[in-house]
Length: 287
Image (tube, rainbow, N blue to C red):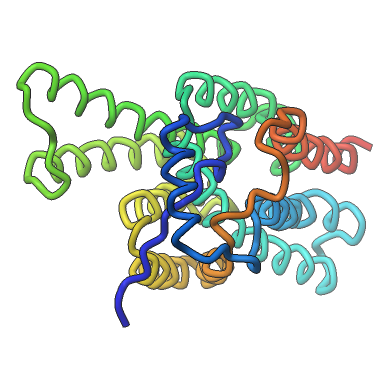
């Protein structure tokens, strides 16, 4: 079977920005030649699904242990199953992050919003995860999103500056591009591990896993079959459930936002929803 090329509509992103007029014109031209896809998960649906799976991590570390304890089979089973289910959110968040990187017109603003969310989330995340207001054993996964955005932002700036000085455009498949991408990935992976971003149960490095998913979605975005196959295989290697999350993405609708891209309240509301989930879990730990 040949590759299915995916041309993402410009409004599909998580950066709360709009695409350029030329991009809209290109999308309109494609729409005239291609049938509009009616079924499949919208961006709003993917974000909602990711939030639901994220809530399972709060159930696993805060709510179920408080309600049932973990010294018995019922409480322990509920906590373990909920924790594993929460990992389905990882590829969904990675995909949404990549769409934000590709379609935002204000990368610095995107970085700033995610940075603020990561800061605000740290204390409630630590409370939910370890019962402490400040704990370095695991940093909240929003930092993984920040590192991913920063990684590709730096990559773009390096390529732009080198091209400006040399007058040569980076070839997608050149040796220099491969070396640059490899070095940047290794550095980002080191930050994920050293800062213990998204470490769950002292063992599973969700931050690093999210980074790998982001690289797959970024570089194979126009090769649907290869992208889905590789992300599914990689996810299956990471305790199975991230692979199932990757399969969910195969049933997305690339031309369906699910809400108005001009509605900034709704767009920023996804950030607030994650905070509310953490605060809700914190209440069970504190009280």
